[in-house]
Image (cartoon, rainbow, N blue to C red; front, side, top):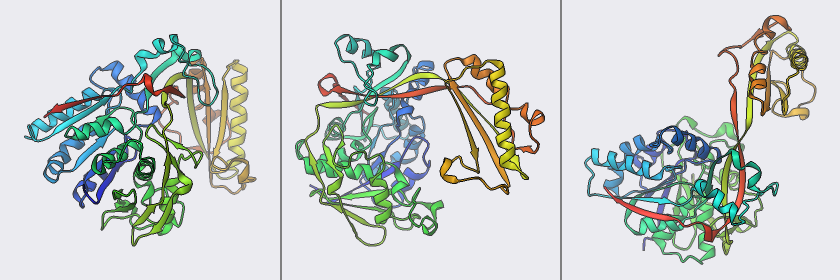
Length: 455
């Protein structure tokens, strides 16, 4: 058993810094590279891509990244866990296999595929058996939006990723796995933690939670003394340096920018935490109130004392569905009387929409530069503001009404208050609204499948 392994985070979301995972592999010693691509809305985007092209539906960026780093990973024995597979794990794995063969790596490593999370084709069968998949926030049954569902994926835990690693995979690709599971799985694989070793599983889960958002725990998006954080242009992504006893240190490669300290780690700990006593995952329930932190030197924070409890009998399901349409239009009004002009333009626009008889579920106006961020807490805007952006958005089920709204923004330039600038890009675009439906499903309804591809 290794006495220490280093798991490096290379992506916090699909669209994160492209060279971050490359630098994690090349700038210092690591054992694992963890890549988190998926958010709730990402699954619906990928499902639409796959509907247009059966070969699509995964994080395309992952494939050229593998072309860049696979030779180094193979040479140094670095393993990769990634949920880049989206809704087409097999397609993603095949693309990586082809890249590996092009690189002359045939016979030198294996790819693990984890599937079973996608239940879109099973929704009707599940509903017919009384599994209502009720909305966790509203308690509505899924049947109320059945005809508008775009994607449905259960969150798988670490276990199938562990199986892939145990079977010799150097790259394990999943669909909708938990962000934390991508880090927990290597710890279970390396240290042999039991499936009911709740304290250790909770520790690995919290390690995954801290590094899952990439540089957000190493200086990026940090509120505490952000002006003093060095060289964010060269920000180092985090590394969890873990031991078999469940303790770990959050750090980053030497010579990189950013900062790992107690405030940066604390900020990430409370990110999407919910009830601190019950951070529920498929693998365990982690108690964040037991987390202890200690300064362990420059850019090193030691994490220890974590307690956990048995996992629940359910998995969370992420469902997306179509919820109408929206459009957002903007105009910038300049000094003098910038805010007064923007207010007047908003009233004129609304009066014209009323005259046209257009019906919307919601009209939202924001005055960017005056109170868009803080609302009424911003107080009365100053009359000396140099500029204010009027931003008006509408949403509703009637696409034609939304389209008509988009034609009413530009005319304000010549038929409203003076001093408009910053109008570019043509009319606002009508966009489909994708809404999120969280639900629970009994674990017995989901069977993860693990396949190994020989390169």
